[in-house]
Length: 132
Image 1 (cartoon, helix red, strand yellow):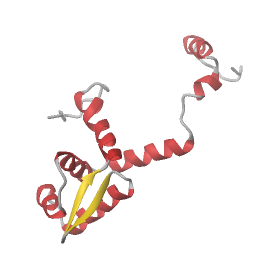
Image 2: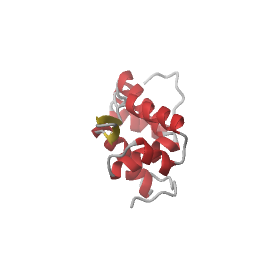
Image 3: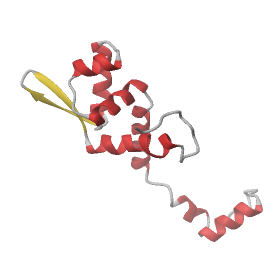
């Protein structure tokens, strides 16, 4: 630990106990992983996309149902579906003349973040949402 840093004594002791600054820095994932996480959280930060994910967690749906329940124009829904697909959170399959959207495994895991500690207050943030 460099003498150039003015660190409170209790913090300095904890860092030393951990093995020093390098050992502490080792808890950080690599830059690509951090970038992926940030991208996923950015996608999840839009309420319309959260609504779509929550609806798709109940069952596969076509855009007409999503538009009706979410209450947005087709073009706006199309944009958000594209963002969700680009992030790998949903997938679409052509079934006859219908396009059916489903939640991917990655989407289920991302939604688990929302429905897990965030939803039940375990993270210390009361967002007002409760899992059904």
